[in-house]
Image 1 (tube, rainbow, N blue to C red):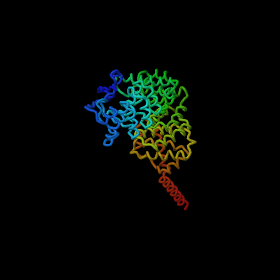
Image 2: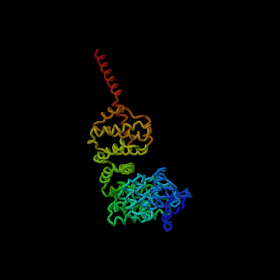
Image 3: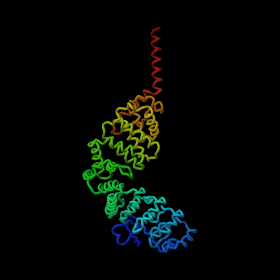
Image 4: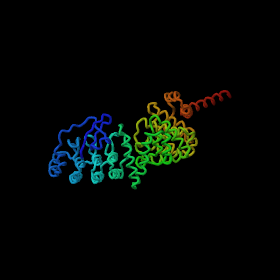
Length: 457
């Protein structure tokens, strides 16, 4: 492989490229690594001297990275064996437990190097069998994945193997003039694989094409193109086409959101969308807050939320809050969404004690959030439980006796009339139900009886 090291101050990465590919690949390193010589370990691999390599590895780390003038990078022995296609040395290194995820100084993993140029598929298959991360063990969104590298080099065979091993296929996140060209190559590769019978690619290509369309086309064009697959679920990230559309950010985000919600209502797909969201919650991983945000926007447009939707969704949100760590903003989003559900579910007859007890116990933990928005909306949830038959039992069980003045004041400063009125009603209810209030009533009743007795005498 003839490697060149081009320099681009915009992207900040480097990749081995052939001269004829210079107009396609410019993923380059801001701070170029100047390599003056090749380390003896790497030279042994280039020269195919396995015995000399074994001797040197007795004194050197098999997973260390060493200078390689030919690749203009510092690479591990395993990377060198892949890049220079030394099959016997490559197999030897894997038998000796060489780490298939060790990256070079320029942050390329062995699978990246296997995706470049004409490296045989054998290397990819062996790396994957050795538990190499099919996504390249990258820790930065800007670095292309091995499957993206395979698309650039038209290595459909390698891309198919990577996707079969679980590689996630996305458009490029690079901000450079070649961005559109990279995305087109990924899309065309997926279409080729789909037409050749790789079933999963026929689903993945929808989402890659969607990302490209959102970047290039107007919202109305996007809806026309994807109207027939709006609720299709990605087999890799478990988001629907509509989830992606509702979460678009930037100048057109309001238009995308309003058109997406209108599509759900016009096509009578509200319940189906919510059911699918709940069903795929366990698989969403880091995308869970994104879907909850979409549901929150949707619920805010409804006059009433059906009881069956509440019974289906609330337990899922509570499970997430109690079992996963979310940042404060995400916690607030979850609690506010629960508040909207509780406020807009008019009929709570099926909210039994076990259901309400779990909701109350988890929300109680958020009441002490230093009078934050999260705490205010947690109190708002309790305000919407007053009308349930278990209200008195709820507040007794958790020891809730009043709403802090700071929370009431914060609510009064907001435009949310339902929240303000709800917290006022909760405060009245708690004061009315408090033991001190009951004691006062009993004392007043006792005094009245004494006065009546005195009048009679």
